[in-house]
Length: 303
Picture (cartoon, rainbow, N blue to C red):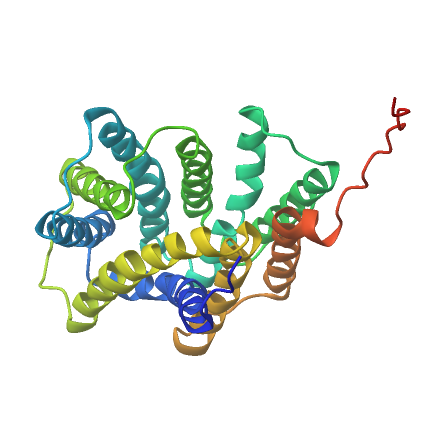
């Protein structure tokens, strides 16, 4: 197999590590002047319309009904619930770094759902699950989440929804290429705007310039660019490399939140960060770091 160009790979990894890691900080800025469901809805609606319009203008056709409905369902699970609940939690004053640490547990829940769907798992991966649960307990035992259990529950539900949607989405027919992402974002935007309407969200004042810039950054960089970068990686590198963002994003988010957002983490929360990242590394990279021993089989005599 030919070696892949280095520059696109570096660019794609940068997009996932830095851009996706920075979206938590951007959300924290945006929710200062936007209602949470409305902000998330505008983000995905804008990104979805822009991407779908581009695809249709360049000759792509809408997919068949079944894959389109499947993509809409995945959009609800991953983006409307998964990302939408994180946005609401940050609006409830959960620090962006803590939110990212909680979301880092997604690979742990993904492993649980993989087992439910009959995908083979290893004892080493279940050890990672156990360690990750310890990290979650530590994270909720004191500090920012201790006084905000509602925010912790929202992020936990969002993480579980994202994990389930990721596993289920790999087992159903989805539109090819970027069309799947366009439908997912468009559906999520519509659902989130409906949630904003049903919960009575209203703009009491015009969002600030930083609020508009945050939504623009989330739509263009956090949605369009980063999602396409992820699609490029899963086609060109090992899955362990493509999913390595899961334990890099929390570090980026914590550094941005504490460095620029005035957020503070207690000693227990720093410990929880390390424990959860170690658990995610064990689950995502364990089979590469500690490959299973090949079982010996007796050789038959050749006749």
